[in-house]
Length: 218
Image (cartoon, rainbow, N blue to C red; front, side, top):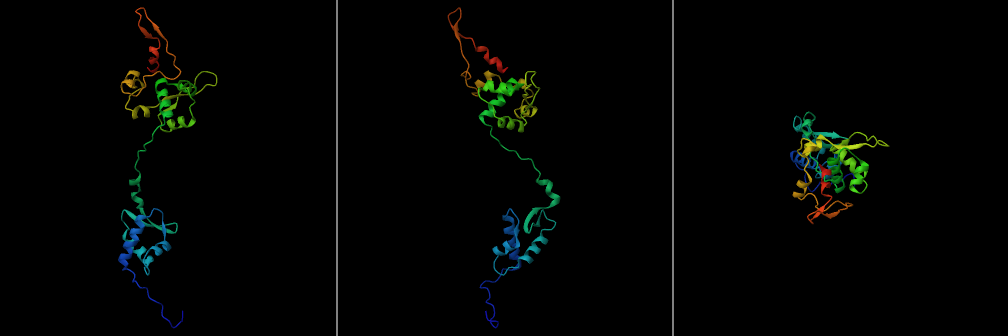
């Protein structure tokens, strides 16, 4: 460009400073991570004074519930430090237990104290460490006494947290087999591996010799 030639003016005039501040507020409200001054200038109309607009916005929000903070070379709205305690609210996390976890938890509830080997014997399949870890993390089970057998394996029992979650005062409040079946929560078929023997009594009627197997849940 010739030194005697004047620079070409922008076809659009920069918005008034008040409008620039509104634009900055809109951008800063929408972002999650801090945004740099250079990035703001790239988003704002040509000719805007981002530095002045930032200073004005920062001053306007002094003493408010949110402050304009300069964080790591960028700018972002953040909760006023003295109001941070309002953000510390417990949240409920919904987690869906796997079938393996539900079966393992049920066995522990009805057979406690029970070792991992005993759980696997009842289920008929191995129990992964992840399944046990999930139940421990939920604080629905905890370690019980060790068995006085070779290897002294640990046992598992349900916790008060488990009882409170399901509205029970003690394990005695667990529903019986008949209640579970009436509610449709228990299959009427015998568990895998159960051998039913059917014999005739003196009246000639068939009797299930394994009818007392439900006592295992009491």
